Amino acid sequence: MAADLEEGRWEELRAAMERGGAAEVIRYIEAIDDPETRRTVYAVAQKGFGNREWTGRNFDALVEVVTAGIGETLQQALQAEEGETAWKLTDFANRLSYNLAADLAECWPGDEAPRERRHFEAGLRAAEDCVRWRRELGKPPDRRAMAYWAVGMHQLSLGNLYEAVGAFETASGLARVSVVGTGRDEVKGGSDFGVLLYAGYLGISRWMLGDPEGRAQYEAACAAFDESASKFEGEQQEDAVFGVAQLRWVAGKFRPDATVAQR
Image (cartoon, rainbow, N blue to C red; front, side, top):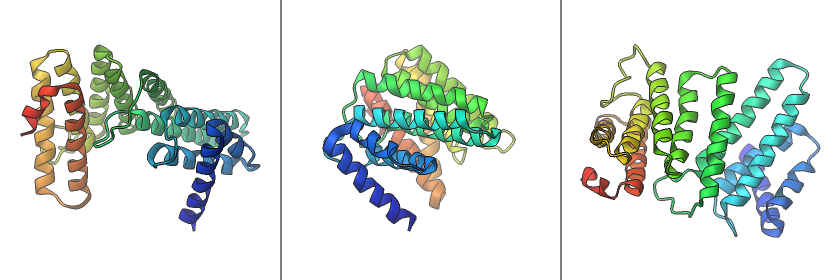
Protein backbone atom coordinates (compact mmCIF):
# COMPACT_ATOMS: atom_id res chain seq x y z
CA MET A 1 0.00 0.00 0.00
CA ALA A 2 2.81 2.44 0.91
CA ALA A 3 4.51 1.73 -2.41
CA ASP A 4 1.25 2.41 -4.28
CA LEU A 5 0.80 5.71 -2.43
CA GLU A 6 4.37 6.73 -3.23
CA GLU A 7 3.90 5.83 -6.90
CA GLY A 8 0.68 7.86 -7.01
CA ARG A 9 2.40 10.88 -5.49
CA TRP A 10 5.30 10.51 -7.91
CA GLU A 11 2.96 10.62 -10.90
CA GLU A 12 1.39 13.81 -9.57
CA LEU A 13 4.78 15.35 -8.85
CA ARG A 14 6.07 14.49 -12.30
CA ALA A 15 2.98 15.97 -13.91
CA ALA A 16 3.47 19.16 -11.91
CA MET A 17 7.13 19.35 -12.94
CA GLU A 18 6.33 18.82 -16.62
CA ARG A 19 3.53 21.37 -16.40
CA GLY A 20 5.26 24.21 -14.57
CA GLY A 21 8.74 23.23 -13.42
CA ALA A 22 10.10 23.25 -9.88
CA ALA A 23 7.90 26.16 -8.80
CA GLU A 24 4.76 24.19 -9.68
CA VAL A 25 6.03 21.16 -7.75
CA ILE A 26 6.68 23.30 -4.67
CA ARG A 27 3.21 24.87 -4.92
CA TYR A 28 1.68 21.40 -5.15
CA ILE A 29 3.50 20.19 -2.02
CA GLU A 30 2.98 23.35 0.02
CA ALA A 31 -0.77 23.12 -0.63
CA ILE A 32 -0.85 19.90 1.43
CA ASP A 33 -2.34 20.68 4.86
CA ASP A 34 -0.65 18.04 6.99
CA PRO A 35 2.99 18.95 7.86
CA GLU A 36 4.14 15.32 8.06
CA THR A 37 2.63 14.57 4.66
CA ARG A 38 4.38 17.61 3.18
CA ARG A 39 7.73 16.32 4.44
CA THR A 40 7.02 12.85 3.12
CA VAL A 41 6.09 14.17 -0.32
CA TYR A 42 9.27 16.26 -0.44
CA ALA A 43 11.19 13.04 0.21
CA VAL A 44 9.28 11.31 -2.60
CA ALA A 45 10.15 14.24 -4.86
CA GLN A 46 13.85 14.01 -4.01
CA LYS A 47 13.89 10.30 -4.69
CA GLY A 48 11.94 10.60 -7.92
CA PHE A 49 13.56 13.64 -9.48
CA GLY A 50 16.98 12.48 -8.36
CA ASN A 51 16.79 8.90 -9.59
CA ARG A 52 14.01 8.47 -12.16
CA GLU A 53 13.73 9.46 -15.80
CA TRP A 54 11.31 12.31 -16.47
CA THR A 55 10.69 14.81 -19.24
CA GLY A 56 13.05 17.75 -18.87
CA ARG A 57 15.11 16.01 -16.20
CA ASN A 58 17.67 18.45 -14.81
CA PHE A 59 19.63 19.08 -11.65
CA ASP A 60 18.57 22.73 -11.27
CA ALA A 61 14.97 21.67 -10.68
CA LEU A 62 16.07 18.97 -8.26
CA VAL A 63 18.11 21.47 -6.23
CA GLU A 64 15.21 23.94 -6.10
CA VAL A 65 12.65 21.37 -4.96
CA VAL A 66 14.82 19.65 -2.35
CA THR A 67 16.10 22.97 -0.99
CA ALA A 68 12.47 23.99 -0.46
CA GLY A 69 11.84 20.69 1.31
CA ILE A 70 14.80 21.24 3.63
CA GLY A 71 13.60 24.75 4.40
CA GLU A 72 10.08 23.50 5.14
CA THR A 73 11.41 20.82 7.49
CA LEU A 74 13.70 23.21 9.36
CA GLN A 75 10.81 25.65 9.79
CA GLN A 76 8.78 22.86 11.34
CA ALA A 77 11.72 22.08 13.64
CA LEU A 78 11.84 25.70 14.83
CA GLN A 79 8.14 25.55 15.66
CA ALA A 80 8.37 22.20 17.48
CA GLU A 81 7.42 22.34 21.14
CA GLU A 82 9.44 19.29 22.18
CA GLY A 83 13.20 18.82 21.86
CA GLU A 84 12.84 15.26 20.60
CA THR A 85 10.48 16.39 17.84
CA ALA A 86 12.91 19.14 16.80
CA TRP A 87 15.73 16.56 16.75
CA LYS A 88 13.77 14.23 14.48
CA LEU A 89 12.82 17.05 12.12
CA THR A 90 16.41 18.28 11.89
CA ASP A 91 17.47 14.71 11.17
CA PHE A 92 14.90 14.55 8.37
CA ALA A 93 16.40 17.70 6.86
CA ASN A 94 19.83 16.13 7.26
CA ARG A 95 18.76 13.08 5.27
CA LEU A 96 17.20 15.19 2.51
CA SER A 97 20.41 17.21 2.31
CA TYR A 98 22.64 14.15 2.17
CA ASN A 99 20.54 12.57 -0.57
CA LEU A 100 20.71 15.80 -2.56
CA ALA A 101 24.50 15.89 -2.20
CA ALA A 102 24.68 12.27 -3.35
CA ASP A 103 22.35 12.89 -6.33
CA LEU A 104 24.57 15.74 -7.49
CA ALA A 105 27.82 13.79 -7.15
CA GLU A 106 29.47 12.52 -10.35
CA CYS A 107 30.51 9.21 -8.82
CA TRP A 108 27.82 6.71 -9.78
CA PRO A 109 28.86 4.02 -12.28
CA GLY A 110 27.12 4.51 -15.60
CA ASP A 111 25.69 7.93 -14.71
CA GLU A 112 26.63 10.20 -17.61
CA ALA A 113 24.16 13.00 -16.84
CA PRO A 114 25.94 16.33 -17.43
CA ARG A 115 26.66 18.38 -14.34
CA GLU A 116 27.79 21.99 -14.19
CA ARG A 117 29.97 23.72 -11.62
CA ARG A 118 26.88 25.18 -9.91
CA HIS A 119 25.62 21.65 -9.26
CA PHE A 120 28.83 20.66 -7.51
CA GLU A 121 28.69 23.89 -5.50
CA ALA A 122 25.11 23.10 -4.45
CA GLY A 123 26.16 19.55 -3.59
CA LEU A 124 29.04 20.87 -1.49
CA ARG A 125 26.74 23.19 0.45
CA ALA A 126 24.34 20.31 1.11
CA ALA A 127 27.20 18.07 2.25
CA GLU A 128 28.65 20.74 4.55
CA ASP A 129 25.20 21.17 6.12
CA CYS A 130 25.20 17.44 6.78
CA VAL A 131 28.61 17.62 8.46
CA ARG A 132 27.29 20.28 10.83
CA TRP A 133 23.94 18.62 11.53
CA ARG A 134 25.42 15.17 12.09
CA ARG A 135 27.82 16.62 14.63
CA GLU A 136 25.04 18.58 16.38
CA LEU A 137 22.70 15.56 16.31
CA GLY A 138 25.35 13.31 17.85
CA LYS A 139 25.47 10.90 14.93
CA PRO A 140 27.90 7.94 15.16
CA PRO A 141 31.26 8.04 13.35
CA ASP A 142 30.16 6.04 10.31
CA ARG A 143 27.29 8.47 9.58
CA ARG A 144 29.55 11.46 10.03
CA ALA A 145 32.05 9.81 7.68
CA MET A 146 29.41 9.67 4.95
CA ALA A 147 28.92 13.43 5.16
CA TYR A 148 32.67 14.08 4.90
CA TRP A 149 32.83 11.73 1.90
CA ALA A 150 30.18 13.86 0.16
CA VAL A 151 32.18 17.01 0.93
CA GLY A 152 35.31 15.38 -0.49
CA MET A 153 33.59 14.18 -3.66
CA HIS A 154 32.28 17.65 -4.51
CA GLN A 155 35.60 19.28 -3.65
CA LEU A 156 37.22 16.81 -6.04
CA SER A 157 34.79 17.77 -8.81
CA LEU A 158 35.43 21.46 -8.14
CA GLY A 159 39.18 20.94 -8.44
CA ASN A 160 39.83 21.79 -4.77
CA LEU A 161 42.23 18.90 -4.32
CA TYR A 162 43.74 19.78 -0.94
CA GLU A 163 40.26 20.26 0.50
CA ALA A 164 39.22 16.91 -1.00
CA VAL A 165 42.19 15.18 0.62
CA GLY A 166 41.28 16.71 3.98
CA ALA A 167 37.64 15.62 3.75
CA PHE A 168 38.52 12.07 2.64
CA GLU A 169 41.13 11.79 5.40
CA THR A 170 38.45 12.70 7.95
CA ALA A 171 35.95 10.28 6.42
CA SER A 172 38.57 7.53 6.43
CA GLY A 173 39.50 8.18 10.05
CA LEU A 174 35.89 8.19 11.22
CA ALA A 175 35.19 4.96 9.34
CA ARG A 176 38.11 3.23 11.05
CA VAL A 177 37.00 4.53 14.45
CA SER A 178 33.53 3.08 13.86
CA VAL A 179 34.91 -0.47 13.55
CA VAL A 180 38.04 -0.31 15.71
CA GLY A 181 38.64 -3.51 17.60
CA THR A 182 36.74 -5.64 15.09
CA GLY A 183 39.66 -6.41 12.80
CA ARG A 184 37.83 -4.70 9.93
CA ASP A 185 39.62 -1.35 10.12
CA GLU A 186 42.46 -2.16 7.73
CA VAL A 187 42.61 -1.99 3.93
CA LYS A 188 42.27 -5.70 3.20
CA GLY A 189 39.71 -8.18 1.96
CA GLY A 190 36.74 -8.50 4.31
CA SER A 191 37.24 -5.09 5.90
CA ASP A 192 34.48 -2.57 6.50
CA PHE A 193 32.89 -1.10 3.35
CA GLY A 194 33.43 2.49 4.44
CA VAL A 195 37.04 1.86 5.44
CA LEU A 196 37.82 0.54 1.95
CA LEU A 197 35.74 3.07 0.04
CA TYR A 198 37.12 6.17 1.72
CA ALA A 199 40.68 4.83 1.55
CA GLY A 200 40.19 4.48 -2.20
CA TYR A 201 38.84 8.01 -2.55
CA LEU A 202 41.70 9.37 -0.47
CA GLY A 203 44.11 7.55 -2.77
CA ILE A 204 42.50 9.06 -5.87
CA SER A 205 42.69 12.60 -4.48
CA ARG A 206 46.31 12.15 -3.41
CA TRP A 207 47.09 10.69 -6.83
CA MET A 208 45.55 13.78 -8.41
CA LEU A 209 48.06 15.87 -6.46
CA GLY A 210 50.92 13.83 -7.89
CA ASP A 211 51.55 11.67 -4.82
CA PRO A 212 52.62 8.22 -6.12
CA GLU A 213 51.48 6.64 -2.84
CA GLY A 214 47.99 7.82 -3.70
CA ARG A 215 47.78 5.48 -6.65
CA ALA A 216 49.06 2.62 -4.52
CA GLN A 217 46.41 3.39 -1.90
CA TYR A 218 43.68 3.44 -4.56
CA GLU A 219 44.87 0.13 -6.03
CA ALA A 220 45.03 -1.45 -2.57
CA ALA A 221 41.42 -0.48 -1.88
CA CYS A 222 40.30 -1.89 -5.25
CA ALA A 223 42.20 -5.13 -4.60
CA ALA A 224 40.59 -5.44 -1.17
CA PHE A 225 37.12 -4.98 -2.66
CA ASP A 226 37.91 -7.55 -5.39
CA GLU A 227 39.05 -10.03 -2.73
CA SER A 228 35.87 -9.45 -0.74
CA ALA A 229 33.76 -9.96 -3.85
CA SER A 230 35.46 -13.28 -4.56
CA LYS A 231 35.28 -14.74 -1.05
CA PHE A 232 31.85 -13.59 0.17
CA GLU A 233 28.26 -13.97 -1.00
CA GLY A 234 25.05 -12.04 -0.64
CA GLU A 235 25.01 -8.45 0.58
CA GLN A 236 28.70 -8.31 1.43
CA GLN A 237 29.60 -9.43 -2.09
CA GLU A 238 27.17 -6.91 -3.62
CA ASP A 239 28.66 -4.11 -1.54
CA ALA A 240 32.17 -5.04 -2.62
CA VAL A 241 31.23 -5.13 -6.30
CA PHE A 242 29.51 -1.75 -5.98
CA GLY A 243 32.39 -0.22 -4.02
CA VAL A 244 35.10 -1.18 -6.49
CA ALA A 245 32.93 -0.13 -9.45
CA GLN A 246 32.46 3.30 -7.86
CA LEU A 247 36.17 3.77 -7.21
CA ARG A 248 37.08 2.74 -10.74
CA TRP A 249 34.41 4.99 -12.23
CA VAL A 250 35.69 8.01 -10.31
CA ALA A 251 39.34 7.22 -11.01
CA GLY A 252 38.53 6.90 -14.70
CA LYS A 253 37.01 10.38 -14.69
CA PHE A 254 39.92 12.10 -12.98
CA ARG A 255 42.90 9.93 -13.92
CA PRO A 256 42.85 8.73 -17.55
CA ASP A 257 45.80 6.48 -16.74
CA ALA A 258 43.69 4.70 -14.09
CA THR A 259 42.67 2.14 -16.71
CA VAL A 260 46.08 0.56 -16.24
CA ALA A 261 45.20 -0.13 -12.62
CA GLN A 262 41.96 -1.81 -13.62
CA ARG A 263 43.45 -4.61 -15.69
